[in-house]
Length: 93
Length: 198
Image (cartoon, rainbow over all chains, first blue to last red):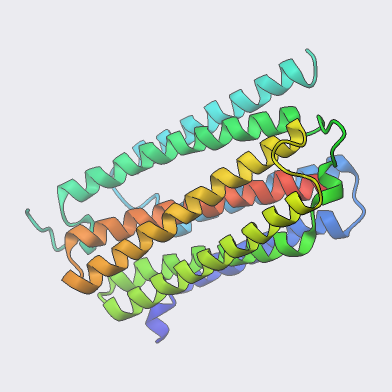
């Protein structure tokens, strides 16, 4: 039975639960908007990295730099799309 | 097909390795799909018209339940891939079934949430905000629904043919898809719900 629950994945799972509870703090504590958003940005991106590396096995093959490169590029384009749109339509710059 | 026994079963054919890389490219495109939805959401979230705002309709309990259901299912599909790698077919199918049941429960809570929104007057036609909210959540929900059907098909194939390089590859790709849906949900949870309720 034990061999079905490898330590790396169990630790990854516990860490992802901790990150979720920390993110929930912004709801239960009375934080400023900036402080709350900072916490959310950190917990969300750490959580995404955790899934990518621990659970999606992104680093275990020879083409790992093609995989990381592809994901990093798409995240870059995603952030450019989101923030450039906000600049134009919401922040009015 | 040539089998390379020095690697886990799912990596043992060249075709599978190409399929995995191809699926990563697809996930890159999926990142962009959800990025455009988030872009529209952030642009329209304050355009509530005469309808309710996020702070008025979001409820913490169903959101927390949905989050934990998906987090646990992401863990169990990871365990399924591990069980597959050590050749434990029964355990693997068990973890697959648990994953899909958790996914189904997630969908149940989400459908309840949608009915609730419509019931309190926040349907898809109410305002720009409710339209983009339900479109973003719905796109994720449709992905989960598709995953449930896909996962069931994979279980049936493994039951029928046993673990082969071909269906091990399919299972691994399914696990990538499922983890990806969990990542998308984390961003929905953080930047739609928690940000809206802050």
